Image (tube, rainbow over all chains, first blue to last red):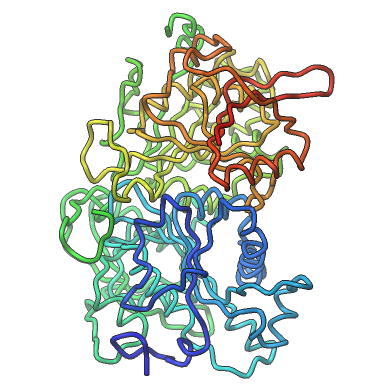
Length: 308
Length: 291
């Protein structure tokens, strides 16, 4: 029986894996360590300020490398510390080294004698300046690499499960993130419903063909993202499509945003031989802000928020 | 106090990079120095791309030698979006040709050229029950901040900008951000440790940090009422709030750092109470250690 009060896409993940949290002692009280009732074992709370946590954090760094190394955006270790562990938190699923598949042990290059947890997924977010507003900057899952390595268990849905529970654990009320127009991750992000567009062309990012997207967090969107079939989110009908290689279209859309028009990503991308195209719908502008935390009013009572 | 920094204020202009969600919540006249409206930069507006590129170049110049250049996705995801930047810039006509070349200022660029920056981002602890809130701002605004980056082009090329740029940037930035509690990270051998200690005795959160790329990294904390920007700016060297040291730490001795870390983890309160001393190849950092 699932420990969560709703169905998820792959409940076997919750039988096989256990949650962990990386957070400093002063950040910890601001977190929900039992999101949707799924408790994080006390021994799985990792304090990055303690020297003894170094071994686990090295394995976590390896997970990041396994996930993002091939795409050229692995995180330097200092970024893990300065931009993740110290300001925010990390939530994920792990497996004790003693129960790990042999293929995974090789993939993670675990040091001899390592008997601790082996993280197989992680979600990192850091708070923005206003309570309840967060920026998510890293979702990593070893599932694709483990599948390639021949691990027999089905780890489908690990990324979505991790992000959904993490947002709940962090008490996120308004979420922002950035991704590339050609990223497959847009399929996961679109599971949360319509995504506000704050930027469509982002020169401040290493890859200007980046969109900044956001959504309000509530139980429905979290459950939908994790595959609860009882939740159906509605998104507006697309007015236009952005093709992943069409830089002129991104810049034109950015100019319209800067001129005050507002848009949302209205569903998952469609992939074809030329890449993917992303559905966009125009929505009514709500003042000059780009959304809560980016100049628009922040609702004080909606959605989960902790530490209030 | 700013009298001593007139040379900087004569040639430098402050700027603020802040998205529209936070720009209005930050102080625009730190220590009475106004930030011009056209120097408040929306990082999400396409027209500011050239300035942001120069800022990334500044970061690469100052942190590159340490192997810690900020990947530019980090620049956006972990600095622009969660926090804000305060810094000082100069007009290109005030910069030497070699300086323009070093910063890779495009020939057709006639805007402000950043020569220092201080980045701060909120820390989740700001929203934990009981978090300090000594600054009079909206109650949903973070008041616990992480000093994420502090840099001046003088670090790599003294004489590029007026002397004192780093200190003035930090002093002004601490007025820009609503800081009730400040965290910071630096390396034991970094000259910036002097600057931070001039703010006040800094309490160590870590002394040996395996989670960081450079384990000889320290993490520190300072409360608002312990921060004395006047002492920082005056360069007194000995902070009036600093107790006398009872321990001298060799920051080049990993075993000593590990031992200190173990004492912190065991509950000791450790503060750096003065600037490091150097004699020959030996450095000692004065500490106060309370079990």
